[in-house]
Length: 147
Image (tube, rainbow, N blue to C red; front, side):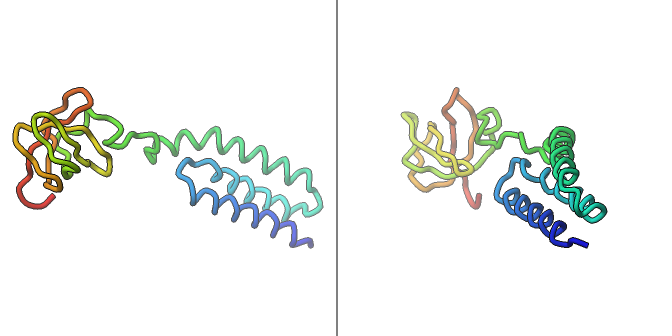
Protein backbone atom coordinates (compact mmCIF):
# COMPACT_ATOMS: atom_id res chain seq x y z
CA UNK A 1 0.00 0.00 0.00
CA UNK A 2 1.19 3.50 -0.78
CA UNK A 3 1.06 5.26 2.57
CA UNK A 4 2.80 8.36 1.26
CA UNK A 5 -0.41 9.42 -0.52
CA UNK A 6 -2.30 9.36 2.78
CA UNK A 7 0.53 11.37 4.33
CA UNK A 8 0.26 13.99 1.57
CA UNK A 9 -3.44 14.54 2.31
CA UNK A 10 -2.68 14.65 6.04
CA UNK A 11 -0.10 17.40 5.42
CA UNK A 12 -2.63 19.32 3.30
CA UNK A 13 -5.13 19.09 6.17
CA UNK A 14 -2.51 20.27 8.68
CA UNK A 15 -1.53 23.22 6.49
CA UNK A 16 -5.18 24.24 6.16
CA UNK A 17 -5.58 23.94 9.93
CA UNK A 18 -2.57 26.18 10.58
CA UNK A 19 -3.93 28.78 8.15
CA UNK A 20 -7.41 28.60 9.71
CA UNK A 21 -6.03 29.08 13.21
CA UNK A 22 -4.45 32.34 12.05
CA UNK A 23 -7.72 33.73 10.67
CA UNK A 24 -11.25 34.12 11.96
CA UNK A 25 -13.11 33.96 8.67
CA UNK A 26 -13.72 30.21 8.31
CA UNK A 27 -12.07 30.03 4.90
CA UNK A 28 -9.54 27.21 4.97
CA UNK A 29 -11.45 24.95 7.38
CA UNK A 30 -13.27 23.47 4.39
CA UNK A 31 -9.99 22.29 2.88
CA UNK A 32 -9.43 20.28 6.05
CA UNK A 33 -12.72 18.47 5.42
CA UNK A 34 -11.80 17.93 1.75
CA UNK A 35 -8.33 16.67 2.64
CA UNK A 36 -9.67 14.15 5.14
CA UNK A 37 -12.18 12.85 2.59
CA UNK A 38 -9.37 12.57 0.05
CA UNK A 39 -7.33 10.72 2.65
CA UNK A 40 -10.11 8.13 2.90
CA UNK A 41 -10.26 7.81 -0.90
CA UNK A 42 -6.46 7.43 -1.02
CA UNK A 43 -6.65 4.62 1.56
CA UNK A 44 -9.19 2.77 -0.59
CA UNK A 45 -7.73 3.58 -4.03
CA UNK A 46 -4.11 4.69 -3.47
CA UNK A 47 -3.23 5.07 -7.17
CA UNK A 48 -6.37 6.98 -8.19
CA UNK A 49 -4.85 10.44 -7.92
CA UNK A 50 -7.48 12.10 -10.10
CA UNK A 51 -10.27 10.70 -7.90
CA UNK A 52 -8.49 12.03 -4.81
CA UNK A 53 -8.08 15.50 -6.26
CA UNK A 54 -11.68 15.59 -7.53
CA UNK A 55 -12.87 14.46 -4.08
CA UNK A 56 -10.82 17.19 -2.44
CA UNK A 57 -12.17 19.93 -4.72
CA UNK A 58 -15.83 18.85 -4.64
CA UNK A 59 -16.00 18.18 -0.89
CA UNK A 60 -14.20 21.46 -0.10
CA UNK A 61 -16.56 23.49 -2.29
CA UNK A 62 -19.68 21.80 -0.92
CA UNK A 63 -18.47 22.25 2.66
CA UNK A 64 -17.71 25.92 1.98
CA UNK A 65 -21.07 26.64 0.36
CA UNK A 66 -23.25 24.62 2.74
CA UNK A 67 -21.56 24.72 6.13
CA UNK A 68 -19.91 28.15 6.17
CA UNK A 69 -23.16 30.17 6.27
CA UNK A 70 -24.56 27.93 9.02
CA UNK A 71 -21.42 28.10 11.17
CA UNK A 72 -20.92 31.80 10.55
CA UNK A 73 -24.41 32.48 11.87
CA UNK A 74 -24.06 30.01 14.74
CA UNK A 75 -20.65 31.37 15.81
CA UNK A 76 -21.87 34.95 15.22
CA UNK A 77 -18.78 35.88 13.21
CA UNK A 78 -20.55 38.68 11.33
CA UNK A 79 -21.79 40.49 14.44
CA UNK A 80 -20.46 43.97 14.96
CA UNK A 81 -18.51 44.78 18.07
CA UNK A 82 -19.92 47.51 20.32
CA UNK A 83 -17.35 49.97 18.97
CA UNK A 84 -18.69 49.42 15.43
CA UNK A 85 -22.13 50.78 16.27
CA UNK A 86 -22.52 53.93 18.31
CA UNK A 87 -26.14 52.98 19.10
CA UNK A 88 -24.94 50.41 21.60
CA UNK A 89 -22.55 52.61 23.56
CA UNK A 90 -24.82 53.84 26.40
CA UNK A 91 -23.68 52.23 29.63
CA UNK A 92 -20.21 51.33 28.37
CA UNK A 93 -17.29 52.35 30.56
CA UNK A 94 -13.82 53.55 29.67
CA UNK A 95 -11.39 56.32 30.48
CA UNK A 96 -10.65 59.87 29.36
CA UNK A 97 -7.79 60.07 26.87
CA UNK A 98 -7.73 63.84 27.27
CA UNK A 99 -9.47 66.36 29.47
CA UNK A 100 -13.21 66.27 28.68
CA UNK A 101 -15.68 69.12 29.28
CA UNK A 102 -18.67 70.71 27.57
CA UNK A 103 -16.38 71.83 24.71
CA UNK A 104 -15.19 68.28 24.03
CA UNK A 105 -12.37 65.82 24.51
CA UNK A 106 -11.60 62.17 23.82
CA UNK A 107 -12.44 58.96 25.66
CA UNK A 108 -11.41 55.35 25.13
CA UNK A 109 -14.22 52.79 25.19
CA UNK A 110 -13.26 49.14 24.56
CA UNK A 111 -9.99 50.15 22.93
CA UNK A 112 -11.57 52.66 20.55
CA UNK A 113 -11.10 56.42 20.78
CA UNK A 114 -14.29 58.52 20.67
CA UNK A 115 -15.01 62.24 20.71
CA UNK A 116 -16.84 63.07 23.93
CA UNK A 117 -18.46 65.89 25.87
CA UNK A 118 -19.43 66.17 29.51
CA UNK A 119 -21.37 68.55 31.73
CA UNK A 120 -18.60 68.18 34.31
CA UNK A 121 -14.85 68.57 33.94
CA UNK A 122 -13.20 65.15 33.56
CA UNK A 123 -9.43 64.96 33.74
CA UNK A 124 -7.27 62.78 31.51
CA UNK A 125 -7.14 59.21 32.84
CA UNK A 126 -10.37 59.39 34.87
CA UNK A 127 -12.93 56.61 34.47
CA UNK A 128 -16.07 57.47 32.51
CA UNK A 129 -19.42 55.96 31.55
CA UNK A 130 -21.42 56.76 28.41
CA UNK A 131 -24.79 58.34 29.29
CA UNK A 132 -25.94 59.66 25.93
CA UNK A 133 -25.17 59.61 22.22
CA UNK A 134 -25.03 62.73 20.10
CA UNK A 135 -24.41 61.69 16.49
CA UNK A 136 -20.81 60.43 16.61
CA UNK A 137 -19.99 62.14 19.89
CA UNK A 138 -20.54 60.46 23.24
CA UNK A 139 -21.77 62.28 26.32
CA UNK A 140 -20.00 60.88 29.38
CA UNK A 141 -19.82 61.36 33.12
CA UNK A 142 -17.30 60.40 35.77
CA UNK A 143 -17.44 56.93 37.28
CA UNK A 144 -16.79 56.52 40.95
CA UNK A 145 -14.90 53.34 41.88
CA UNK A 146 -13.76 50.45 39.64
CA UNK A 147 -14.64 49.95 35.98
